[in-house]
Image (cartoon, rainbow, N blue to C red; front, side, top):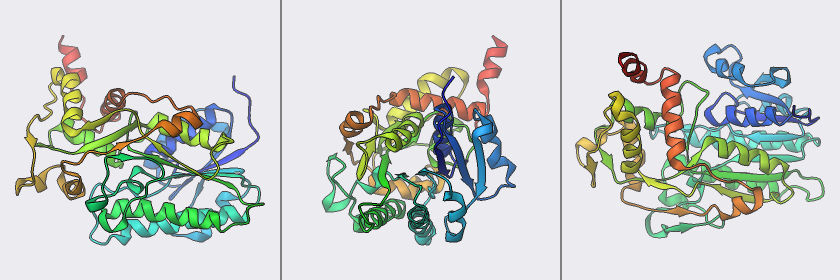
Length: 354
Protein backbone atom coordinates (compact mmCIF):
# COMPACT_ATOMS: atom_id res chain seq x y z
CA UNK A 1 0.00 0.00 0.00
CA UNK A 2 1.37 3.38 -1.02
CA UNK A 3 1.90 5.87 1.82
CA UNK A 4 -0.38 8.89 1.82
CA UNK A 5 1.55 12.03 0.88
CA UNK A 6 0.55 15.31 2.49
CA UNK A 7 1.01 17.31 -0.70
CA UNK A 8 -2.11 18.31 -2.60
CA UNK A 9 -1.56 18.56 -6.36
CA UNK A 10 -3.77 20.55 -8.72
CA UNK A 11 -4.27 18.93 -12.14
CA UNK A 12 -5.89 21.28 -14.65
CA UNK A 13 -7.98 19.57 -17.32
CA UNK A 14 -8.12 16.32 -15.37
CA UNK A 15 -11.06 15.04 -17.43
CA UNK A 16 -8.94 15.05 -20.61
CA UNK A 17 -6.93 12.25 -22.21
CA UNK A 18 -3.62 13.20 -20.59
CA UNK A 19 -5.02 14.88 -17.47
CA UNK A 20 -6.82 11.71 -16.38
CA UNK A 21 -3.56 9.75 -16.59
CA UNK A 22 -1.65 12.39 -14.62
CA UNK A 23 -4.36 12.21 -11.97
CA UNK A 24 -4.09 8.43 -11.81
CA UNK A 25 -0.30 8.43 -11.36
CA UNK A 26 -0.52 10.99 -8.56
CA UNK A 27 -3.30 9.11 -6.76
CA UNK A 28 -1.44 5.81 -7.06
CA UNK A 29 1.67 7.43 -5.56
CA UNK A 30 -0.28 8.63 -2.52
CA UNK A 31 -0.94 12.28 -3.37
CA UNK A 32 -4.19 14.11 -2.75
CA UNK A 33 -5.42 15.45 -6.09
CA UNK A 34 -7.64 18.39 -6.93
CA UNK A 35 -8.70 18.33 -10.57
CA UNK A 36 -10.31 21.09 -12.58
CA UNK A 37 -13.15 20.64 -15.06
CA UNK A 38 -15.14 23.29 -16.88
CA UNK A 39 -18.53 21.95 -15.83
CA UNK A 40 -19.16 19.88 -12.70
CA UNK A 41 -22.56 18.88 -14.10
CA UNK A 42 -21.19 17.30 -17.29
CA UNK A 43 -21.60 13.63 -16.41
CA UNK A 44 -20.07 12.47 -19.70
CA UNK A 45 -16.83 14.27 -18.87
CA UNK A 46 -16.83 13.21 -15.23
CA UNK A 47 -17.61 9.52 -15.81
CA UNK A 48 -14.03 8.42 -16.66
CA UNK A 49 -12.75 10.06 -13.48
CA UNK A 50 -14.92 7.77 -11.35
CA UNK A 51 -12.75 4.79 -12.27
CA UNK A 52 -9.59 6.43 -10.96
CA UNK A 53 -8.21 4.85 -7.77
CA UNK A 54 -8.43 6.31 -4.28
CA UNK A 55 -11.51 8.43 -4.87
CA UNK A 56 -11.30 9.56 -1.24
CA UNK A 57 -8.24 11.62 -2.22
CA UNK A 58 -9.74 13.09 -5.40
CA UNK A 59 -11.53 16.45 -5.39
CA UNK A 60 -13.06 18.09 -8.48
CA UNK A 61 -13.60 21.82 -8.87
CA UNK A 62 -14.81 24.06 -11.69
CA UNK A 63 -12.37 26.38 -13.49
CA UNK A 64 -12.12 27.84 -16.98
CA UNK A 65 -9.03 28.92 -18.92
CA UNK A 66 -10.81 32.10 -20.02
CA UNK A 67 -12.05 32.97 -16.51
CA UNK A 68 -8.98 34.17 -14.56
CA UNK A 69 -10.99 34.67 -11.38
CA UNK A 70 -11.74 30.94 -11.22
CA UNK A 71 -8.13 29.94 -10.56
CA UNK A 72 -7.43 31.34 -7.10
CA UNK A 73 -9.85 28.95 -5.45
CA UNK A 74 -8.53 26.08 -7.55
CA UNK A 75 -4.88 26.73 -6.60
CA UNK A 76 -5.44 27.56 -2.93
CA UNK A 77 -4.00 24.91 -0.62
CA UNK A 78 -2.06 23.07 -3.34
CA UNK A 79 1.70 22.72 -3.07
CA UNK A 80 2.18 21.51 -6.65
CA UNK A 81 0.38 22.19 -9.94
CA UNK A 82 0.27 20.22 -13.20
CA UNK A 83 -1.17 22.55 -15.83
CA UNK A 84 -2.34 20.12 -18.52
CA UNK A 85 -5.45 21.87 -19.87
CA UNK A 86 -5.08 23.42 -23.33
CA UNK A 87 -7.13 23.38 -26.52
CA UNK A 88 -6.04 20.78 -29.13
CA UNK A 89 -8.42 20.96 -32.11
CA UNK A 90 -8.41 18.37 -34.89
CA UNK A 91 -8.80 21.12 -37.51
CA UNK A 92 -7.50 24.62 -38.08
CA UNK A 93 -10.08 27.15 -36.83
CA UNK A 94 -11.11 30.09 -39.00
CA UNK A 95 -9.91 32.39 -36.24
CA UNK A 96 -6.51 31.27 -34.83
CA UNK A 97 -7.28 33.14 -31.61
CA UNK A 98 -9.85 30.47 -30.82
CA UNK A 99 -6.94 28.28 -29.73
CA UNK A 100 -4.16 30.83 -29.14
CA UNK A 101 -6.12 32.96 -26.67
CA UNK A 102 -7.20 30.20 -24.23
CA UNK A 103 -3.75 28.59 -24.42
CA UNK A 104 -1.86 31.78 -23.57
CA UNK A 105 -4.38 33.49 -21.29
CA UNK A 106 -5.20 30.25 -19.51
CA UNK A 107 -1.56 29.50 -18.81
CA UNK A 108 -0.99 33.01 -17.49
CA UNK A 109 -4.09 32.86 -15.29
CA UNK A 110 -2.88 29.63 -13.69
CA UNK A 111 0.68 30.91 -13.18
CA UNK A 112 -0.45 34.22 -11.70
CA UNK A 113 -2.66 32.34 -9.24
CA UNK A 114 0.30 30.12 -8.33
CA UNK A 115 2.44 33.20 -7.70
CA UNK A 116 -0.21 34.62 -5.36
CA UNK A 117 -0.35 31.41 -3.33
CA UNK A 118 3.06 31.03 -1.74
CA UNK A 119 2.38 27.43 -0.73
CA UNK A 120 2.88 26.42 -4.39
CA UNK A 121 6.46 25.24 -4.77
CA UNK A 122 6.43 23.35 -8.10
CA UNK A 123 4.59 23.78 -11.38
CA UNK A 124 4.79 21.67 -14.53
CA UNK A 125 3.19 22.79 -17.79
CA UNK A 126 2.23 20.58 -20.73
CA UNK A 127 3.75 22.14 -23.80
CA UNK A 128 4.52 20.27 -27.04
CA UNK A 129 7.19 19.54 -29.61
CA UNK A 130 5.04 21.95 -31.63
CA UNK A 131 6.82 24.66 -29.63
CA UNK A 132 10.17 23.26 -30.75
CA UNK A 133 9.84 22.47 -34.46
CA UNK A 134 10.10 25.13 -37.15
CA UNK A 135 9.00 24.93 -40.76
CA UNK A 136 10.16 26.78 -43.86
CA UNK A 137 13.75 27.99 -44.11
CA UNK A 138 14.34 27.44 -40.37
CA UNK A 139 13.32 23.78 -40.43
CA UNK A 140 15.83 21.26 -39.07
CA UNK A 141 16.13 17.49 -38.93
CA UNK A 142 17.44 17.16 -35.36
CA UNK A 143 15.88 19.07 -32.47
CA UNK A 144 16.78 19.46 -28.80
CA UNK A 145 15.27 21.46 -25.95
CA UNK A 146 17.40 24.44 -26.99
CA UNK A 147 15.26 24.89 -30.11
CA UNK A 148 12.18 27.09 -30.37
CA UNK A 149 9.62 27.07 -33.17
CA UNK A 150 9.67 30.03 -35.55
CA UNK A 151 6.20 31.56 -35.11
CA UNK A 152 6.13 32.89 -38.66
CA UNK A 153 6.39 29.40 -40.16
CA UNK A 154 3.97 27.30 -38.11
CA UNK A 155 0.18 26.63 -37.98
CA UNK A 156 -2.12 28.11 -35.29
CA UNK A 157 -1.99 25.14 -32.89
CA UNK A 158 1.81 25.20 -32.95
CA UNK A 159 1.68 28.96 -32.41
CA UNK A 160 -0.58 28.50 -29.40
CA UNK A 161 1.82 26.07 -27.72
CA UNK A 162 4.87 28.21 -28.53
CA UNK A 163 3.35 31.48 -27.36
CA UNK A 164 1.92 29.92 -24.20
CA UNK A 165 5.24 28.34 -23.24
CA UNK A 166 7.23 31.50 -23.97
CA UNK A 167 4.78 33.55 -21.91
CA UNK A 168 5.21 31.08 -19.04
CA UNK A 169 9.00 31.33 -19.08
CA UNK A 170 8.89 35.13 -19.32
CA UNK A 171 6.60 35.24 -16.28
CA UNK A 172 8.77 32.79 -14.33
CA UNK A 173 11.96 34.71 -15.09
CA UNK A 174 10.30 37.91 -13.87
CA UNK A 175 9.54 36.48 -10.42
CA UNK A 176 11.77 37.02 -7.40
CA UNK A 177 14.27 34.16 -7.52
CA UNK A 178 14.23 33.74 -3.76
CA UNK A 179 10.49 33.07 -3.55
CA UNK A 180 9.38 31.78 -6.96
CA UNK A 181 8.07 28.28 -7.51
CA UNK A 182 9.96 25.68 -9.52
CA UNK A 183 8.83 25.58 -13.18
CA UNK A 184 9.22 22.80 -15.74
CA UNK A 185 7.68 22.24 -19.17
CA UNK A 186 7.05 18.86 -20.77
CA UNK A 187 7.04 18.90 -24.58
CA UNK A 188 5.46 15.66 -25.82
CA UNK A 189 5.07 14.41 -29.37
CA UNK A 190 1.84 12.89 -30.67
CA UNK A 191 0.32 11.29 -27.57
CA UNK A 192 -1.18 7.83 -28.06
CA UNK A 193 -1.86 4.94 -25.69
CA UNK A 194 -4.81 3.75 -23.58
CA UNK A 195 -7.62 6.25 -23.05
CA UNK A 196 -9.93 6.51 -20.07
CA UNK A 197 -11.97 9.19 -21.81
CA UNK A 198 -14.49 8.32 -24.53
CA UNK A 199 -13.46 10.82 -27.18
CA UNK A 200 -12.77 14.48 -27.94
CA UNK A 201 -9.00 14.20 -28.30
CA UNK A 202 -7.24 14.66 -31.61
CA UNK A 203 -4.75 11.79 -31.45
CA UNK A 204 -7.63 9.41 -30.80
CA UNK A 205 -9.42 10.78 -33.84
CA UNK A 206 -6.47 9.88 -36.07
CA UNK A 207 -6.57 6.23 -34.96
CA UNK A 208 -10.37 6.13 -35.09
CA UNK A 209 -10.50 7.27 -38.69
CA UNK A 210 -8.04 4.58 -39.71
CA UNK A 211 -10.10 1.83 -38.06
CA UNK A 212 -13.51 2.91 -39.35
CA UNK A 213 -12.22 3.50 -42.88
CA UNK A 214 -12.70 7.26 -43.02
CA UNK A 215 -9.06 7.79 -44.02
CA UNK A 216 -8.89 6.93 -47.73
CA UNK A 217 -5.15 7.45 -48.24
CA UNK A 218 -1.81 7.96 -46.50
CA UNK A 219 0.01 11.24 -47.06
CA UNK A 220 3.72 11.27 -46.30
CA UNK A 221 3.55 12.69 -42.76
CA UNK A 222 5.85 11.72 -39.92
CA UNK A 223 5.17 11.84 -36.17
CA UNK A 224 7.31 11.65 -33.07
CA UNK A 225 5.18 9.37 -30.87
CA UNK A 226 4.85 8.93 -27.13
CA UNK A 227 2.64 6.84 -24.89
CA UNK A 228 0.31 8.81 -22.62
CA UNK A 229 1.53 6.78 -19.64
CA UNK A 230 5.07 8.00 -20.21
CA UNK A 231 3.91 11.61 -20.53
CA UNK A 232 1.97 11.33 -17.27
CA UNK A 233 4.96 9.76 -15.52
CA UNK A 234 7.16 12.60 -16.83
CA UNK A 235 4.83 15.24 -15.37
CA UNK A 236 4.94 13.66 -11.93
CA UNK A 237 8.70 13.06 -12.10
CA UNK A 238 9.22 16.72 -13.01
CA UNK A 239 7.18 17.84 -10.00
CA UNK A 240 9.27 15.64 -7.72
CA UNK A 241 12.73 16.10 -9.27
CA UNK A 242 15.46 18.31 -7.87
CA UNK A 243 16.91 18.68 -11.40
CA UNK A 244 13.87 19.97 -13.25
CA UNK A 245 13.65 23.60 -12.15
CA UNK A 246 13.85 25.90 -15.15
CA UNK A 247 14.01 22.99 -17.60
CA UNK A 248 12.10 21.98 -20.75
CA UNK A 249 11.92 18.30 -21.61
CA UNK A 250 11.01 16.83 -24.96
CA UNK A 251 8.95 13.73 -24.25
CA UNK A 252 9.10 11.47 -27.32
CA UNK A 253 9.82 7.77 -27.69
CA UNK A 254 12.54 6.42 -29.94
CA UNK A 255 9.87 5.75 -32.58
CA UNK A 256 9.31 8.45 -35.20
CA UNK A 257 6.79 6.88 -37.59
CA UNK A 258 5.19 7.82 -40.90
CA UNK A 259 1.42 7.56 -41.24
CA UNK A 260 1.91 4.53 -43.48
CA UNK A 261 3.83 2.84 -40.62
CA UNK A 262 1.02 3.56 -38.18
CA UNK A 263 -1.54 2.25 -40.67
CA UNK A 264 0.55 -0.87 -41.21
CA UNK A 265 0.67 -1.63 -37.49
CA UNK A 266 -3.12 -1.25 -37.25
CA UNK A 267 -3.71 -3.30 -40.41
CA UNK A 268 -1.56 -6.16 -39.16
CA UNK A 269 -3.32 -6.28 -35.79
CA UNK A 270 -6.93 -5.59 -36.77
CA UNK A 271 -7.23 -6.72 -40.41
CA UNK A 272 -8.14 -10.24 -39.30
CA UNK A 273 -11.18 -8.82 -37.53
CA UNK A 274 -12.51 -7.06 -40.61
CA UNK A 275 -11.14 -3.56 -40.00
CA UNK A 276 -10.12 -2.18 -43.39
CA UNK A 277 -7.18 0.16 -42.83
CA UNK A 278 -6.10 1.86 -46.03
CA UNK A 279 -2.75 1.11 -47.65
CA UNK A 280 -3.06 3.72 -50.39
CA UNK A 281 -0.22 6.23 -50.31
CA UNK A 282 -0.44 9.89 -51.32
CA UNK A 283 2.87 11.66 -51.88
CA UNK A 284 1.56 15.07 -52.91
CA UNK A 285 -1.46 17.26 -52.29
CA UNK A 286 -4.41 16.73 -54.62
CA UNK A 287 -8.01 17.90 -54.87
CA UNK A 288 -9.17 14.74 -53.12
CA UNK A 289 -6.58 15.17 -50.39
CA UNK A 290 -8.77 17.70 -48.58
CA UNK A 291 -11.10 14.81 -47.71
CA UNK A 292 -8.34 12.96 -45.93
CA UNK A 293 -8.90 12.88 -42.17
CA UNK A 294 -11.86 15.17 -42.76
CA UNK A 295 -11.06 18.78 -41.81
CA UNK A 296 -7.81 17.76 -40.13
CA UNK A 297 -6.15 17.61 -43.56
CA UNK A 298 -5.21 21.28 -43.61
CA UNK A 299 -3.39 20.89 -40.29
CA UNK A 300 -1.21 18.16 -41.85
CA UNK A 301 -0.38 19.97 -45.08
CA UNK A 302 2.69 21.91 -43.80
CA UNK A 303 4.29 18.64 -42.67
CA UNK A 304 3.98 16.65 -45.92
CA UNK A 305 7.27 14.92 -46.72
CA UNK A 306 9.11 16.40 -43.74
CA UNK A 307 11.05 14.34 -41.21
CA UNK A 308 12.22 15.65 -37.86
CA UNK A 309 13.87 13.83 -34.98
CA UNK A 310 13.34 14.95 -31.38
CA UNK A 311 15.96 13.94 -28.84
CA UNK A 312 14.79 12.28 -25.62
CA UNK A 313 18.24 12.01 -24.06
CA UNK A 314 17.69 14.82 -21.55
CA UNK A 315 14.40 13.50 -20.15
CA UNK A 316 15.80 9.99 -19.83
CA UNK A 317 18.86 11.26 -17.98
CA UNK A 318 17.13 13.74 -15.66
CA UNK A 319 13.73 12.14 -15.05
CA UNK A 320 14.47 8.47 -15.67
CA UNK A 321 11.77 7.91 -18.27
CA UNK A 322 12.11 4.59 -20.16
CA UNK A 323 9.81 4.89 -23.13
CA UNK A 324 7.10 2.47 -24.18
CA UNK A 325 7.34 1.57 -27.87
CA UNK A 326 5.34 3.45 -30.47
CA UNK A 327 3.73 0.19 -31.60
CA UNK A 328 2.40 -0.55 -28.13
CA UNK A 329 1.07 3.01 -27.79
CA UNK A 330 -0.74 2.72 -31.13
CA UNK A 331 -2.32 -0.64 -30.32
CA UNK A 332 -3.29 0.32 -26.76
CA UNK A 333 -5.10 3.38 -28.09
CA UNK A 334 -6.88 1.37 -30.77
CA UNK A 335 -8.09 -1.25 -28.31
CA UNK A 336 -9.28 1.39 -25.84
CA UNK A 337 -11.27 3.16 -28.59
CA UNK A 338 -12.98 -0.16 -29.30
CA UNK A 339 -13.57 -0.86 -25.60
CA UNK A 340 -14.99 2.64 -25.09
CA UNK A 341 -17.43 2.26 -27.98
CA UNK A 342 -15.81 4.93 -30.16
CA UNK A 343 -14.98 2.31 -32.80
CA UNK A 344 -17.40 -0.56 -33.58
CA UNK A 345 -16.35 -3.80 -31.90
CA UNK A 346 -15.73 -6.27 -34.73
CA UNK A 347 -13.44 -8.34 -32.49
CA UNK A 348 -16.32 -9.63 -30.38
CA UNK A 349 -18.24 -10.65 -33.52
CA UNK A 350 -15.32 -12.56 -35.02
CA UNK A 351 -14.47 -14.23 -31.70
CA UNK A 352 -18.11 -15.27 -31.20
CA UNK A 353 -18.25 -16.90 -34.66
CA UNK A 354 -15.10 -18.90 -34.03
